[in-house]
Length: 434
Ligand SMILES: [Zn+2]
Ligand SMILES: [Zn+2]
Image 1 (cartoon, protein in one colour):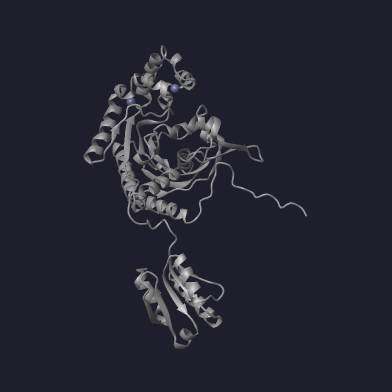
Image 2 (spheres, rainbow, N blue to C red; image 1 turned 120 degrees about the vertical axis):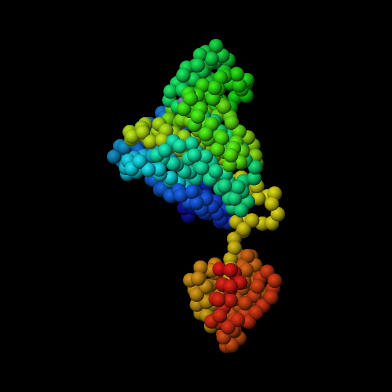
């Protein structure tokens, strides 16, 4: 006898999302769509597969993402393709390709989907992960920054009826091409005498991109980093005015924010507002989402100048945070267990036909219905109805067939009611509020 072939397993660093766990994912995505559409955002779907050059140009060849973490391969015709590591570049590419930015209007787009990065496997980090994000293209008005942050706040407070618990909004400005250039020169000068004492990454960053020194997580480097000048003190008048307009309006709307001068992004196309939302539940280092303004990206991709502002939420982490937050709230959240409206129980073959017909009628009204394919003893059927968390059971036996009245059992109270066959659907719809 040949050996049985071994089981094929999911690719390392990827995972299956199974029911009932997927209920919360659906809920989060439904809530996001509703929250974003209230602000007039529309969905965009771009391919997962993109030309490698897109990310080399936008994210930058000297980033960890592009140099170490992308899934890049040569297609059969030798074109270099990459599984998208993020979606902003794709959204901007798509807008340029379809001429959306030529109309001078403001475009508000959101996306939900998987991204791919070959990171070192660790808890809570996946090589296929999900992002919910949005981009506003076509204006650098400070009210756009404020409106998007307000939308995020509203979404995070209400998501899955549980919210994410306490969260902090950290905000900064990274200036524009002009004022940042001056600041980076200064930073380079300040790093010169101290960089030898810093970690290897920082020594390299001090040469290539001094702003990235602020990304350093090495404990020993923190006192050095804390003494470095911050960009907020070196903004040009226009950038300062923009930042004050954003933070002033956030305050006026009662949206708590913490000005964090060391929050920077190392990519050149990022401009002005940059922000992060961290969750108290996950510790300060764990950002739920990040975003900011990228007024230089469209030009980098070969398009006309077009300001942009956007964010990306790590959906895997968001889902985990909601589960965490819901533990402190009494009762089982409705996404924690499968729910079924009706279980149809039938005992012998003549009732099978009537049961399938009733199930079809109820399902056409989009009620969630289950039934067995073989006859089953009543007690066992009701046990199954309980296990499925059915709200009602409809019982159909020989007697019910003869009288034309079915037994409808409320699985919560145990109360049983005789209902005429042709009235069963309306009776259940009314009680289920469906
Ligand atoms: Zn500036
Ligand atoms: Zn360092």
